[in-house]
Image 1 (spheres, rainbow, N blue to C red):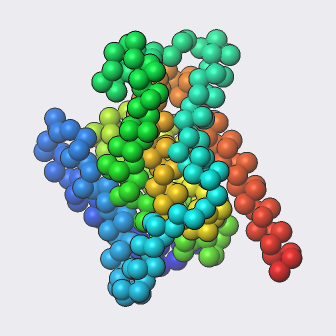
Image 2: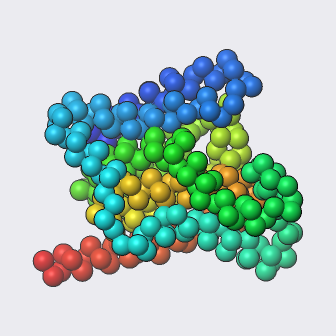
Length: 272
């Protein structure tokens, strides 16, 4: 059952973002940058509600989560490279079951590179990652989804359950973009997007718990997800078989990590 502060957060997030996205209905040829203001809805909602309920001290506590960098190096590697690794595992399985070779030319073209610039793309990956992290969703959303909603929900239910709830609302929150600017969500069919995002939200919950509430690592994971699926993966996911392999692998990873979270929590409760 959702608690009032989280319900208020979802309601305010939707109101702010959908209002900021509403001009896009009048600008059908607008670029994806027009979607950026609405992406700040979750963080704005979190800051407004935290300020109202906990004052300046609460806001400072929330903001400190975005600067919580003292975590194991392995979590940084997972956040930055984990979803890219999952994408390449999807490609390997896709080829193993007889799928067509990926159209790397389309991927490179989307990066503004020619078909023989593959190694240049690899060298520039940190730049693409930073752009995907700093411009748009990752830095605009995670104080809200994880720093506010995940933090409060997991005080009452298992973190993976909180992740599923957030993932559902996270997906529905994107609906206006599906209708008016589908390229901003990778042009992925909503039927595949919903289970993928709910599973990803469980993965975010796992990382949030393992890093003792670091929103910084959630921002990096969001950037890694956007780079892998939304930037590199968009041309590749035109192949529906590859897309669904990636969705299934994401759900499987979420299931494995959720079992680990439950085991860790139950073990801690037993020893306490």
